[in-house]
Length: 472
Image 1 (tube, rainbow, N blue to C red):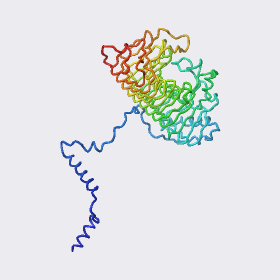
Image 2: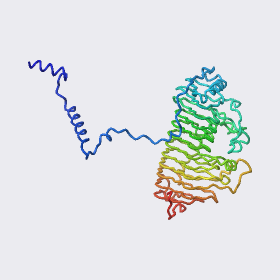
Image 3: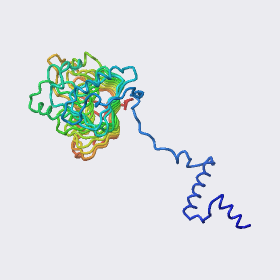
Image 4: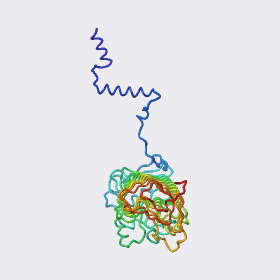
């Protein structure tokens, strides 16, 4: 009878063995935690113990998601050859021409498989996805004729570097909407060295092209790719809205001229986050037109967020505003920036003739290492499109907050050079520590005024205003 009872227990519960001490301790701990949940004085609610870590703040909702594309094709379907030697310019242009028929009819996607796809410039279309698979490399043509000349931007009045027109970008979009440029960390390489040498040798005839330019476009996502060796500014959204650029790696030799990473220009609702950039110019520069042409067009850059950008530039800044800011810049958030081995961390650039305004700018949580001048306002580039600029057009600055900045191994104190005759209202510096600067180093300030609190080294007298500021 006893053996039958044992067999029944074994059948129900399995063979019984004495639990080890660690198992008993684990069971006891779990029971204790569960018992606490029924106590109104519980110090460790289960919801806290099991909660997920907080998600990082994001502005990616600026881009409105698009449905899966109805038509998906490969560049191979249009005669593309990924051997790195065969020109695929015609294949890309034929592919886009075919994809255009699906605008507003379910959209289309062009896949770029692994391989090296040599091409000249090509345009994008609306309701379209360009997808680069892992191992895919789009290589910019070395033939300048495959980067045709287009009209200058109306807010610049001429090419930025040379009079007249400018070379089109390698990947170009004008007047499109609902576009995605993404992939599995595929690469776009502009092979910019040829263009840099034209600049260095002073034989450049027209302004260099960008790697990607978006004009007059809406709802664009650029993500999860590597862009490298752009001839000029790498990514240039101009006259655009609802643009998200995230998860990008942007690379150029540190001596490559004017290879800015991302330059939003006269655009609104632009999100730039989680990007790594090495370049020969600003990592990010916010612009809005050049002198009288920007003033006349009056198309500002506004509602722009730059977040979690890291990188290095030995000649320029981590994030800059200007110097082309004649259409105005407002409502800017720059935060969680990490910059090293650079000329400047944060830089506002302007000059006589620019006009325009910079207002409602918040720059916070900036970490720097070996940055020569951590914070800089600069002027005096004497850089104008033509003789039509107005020497009486001076910029206006209002409500600029720079806070929570730590810089180590800096070599110079901040330099704040305003423009004579310009106005400053609500300039505020808070919780700024610059280590490595000589004790004798002092801030250099001219034509600026504002407030400072919790700043080391001690700021210039122009920032030691005893009044109060609602912005500060």
